[in-house]
Length: 260
Length: 250
Ligand SMILES: Nc1ncnc2c1ncn2[C@@H]1O[C@H](COP(=O)(O)OP(=O)(O)O)[C@@H](O)[C@H]1O
Ligand SMILES: [Mg+2]
Picture (cartoon, each protein chain N blue to C red):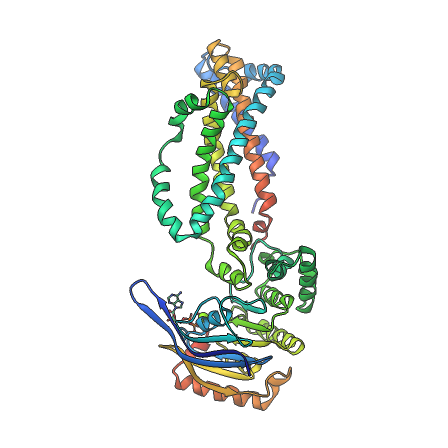
């Protein structure tokens, strides 16, 4: 039984002059504790799909279920991490990490304590009192992760969380992501435009196509989830396989930093 | 790059420059209506006890008015800015009433509320209210949607969003509007006090003028200027304390 399931989902945005069909007939299932990656060209509906899974948007058609419940709105144990704006600049690192708990009604002291533990997990314990403006891009993303960890999320949704980082920081944070997942075993949907990142972190890699957005194909990648996977020849084979699919989609430019 | 002056040093230099300009202007005009600082400052010093009473009254009136105006305007402005429906109703109303100089209602308020504090406070609070209302509305509209979305994804209610996102995001703009409105507020207070009542710096100045006590009048003007600076600095201090995060951004 899948933990997150989108069944024959469609989503239509009512634009100013015309409606945009962002998703149509999209079906996707993610198992409990399964980490998947989603890749595809700009505008193919990756962000929209995450907003649906987070319960922030309702589908125009089809159903979204999480943990065997039809999704009616944001859910306590789901955590969504956006590329930008995830952190509030007027809150300290600690308060940002504690925000999810505070909103869910935990008292200030307990939230702070759990936030500090989470910050420790992502290696930011000594920056608890700093403001986001004082942190580097990579550190800010770690705070976003700490917020999810503090919440004890069982479903982590991430929209290109690392795309603002340079290559070295990226790998560093990919390792942090992997480490967190290995310790906590949450279901995870990582939207990325990096082939290597998708293959490193997704047990399955979902390739999406645009106009309207739907699943094009799914690359099975069962060996993902090991810290040393990048050095494994299988890793490179999977990257090549994925690159080929994306090239046949005419979508390879999407990897070269065209951000959405 | 040359290092900037410290705040007190900057103030000191500005005060000396103003005094010098004042003295030169007084010498050039040679009119008893404009005594130089050498005449006015001793008068000021001699009148400090009396002036303090009037200054405190004036400061109390203007600050309570500003607080009332802001406390009413901020939640309303933020709510309007966050709700397209409310905005479509209130925005035209705001645009129509904003340019109307509220000070012209002083006579009406004097009739309604008498010559005491209430009419003055209502007038200044109204003026500040309209300034802050529009600022708060604009600031709420400018809050990045991504910030709202990420907090909503944590299950935030509208109230949570107002408290954790919209209000703190709007705070710097609200403080700017408050600082700008101090000038207007003090000017209107002066007018109201000089027309109605028997205390406050506005009254003190116009009373001295009526008695042709020019050094005394200038002592009052000095006290008014100092009160304005005190008010402005108090708002600045409150801003620094509540928006600490802004000085850390790079
Ligand atoms: N709020 C919106 N209103 C109207 N159209 C939108 C909105 N958000 C996204 N779209 C459109 O929906 C399609 C999918 O967008 P998105 O989900 O952001 O794709 P991706 O994240 O893969 O780039 C695009 O054509 C985009 O222009
Ligand atoms: Mg996107």
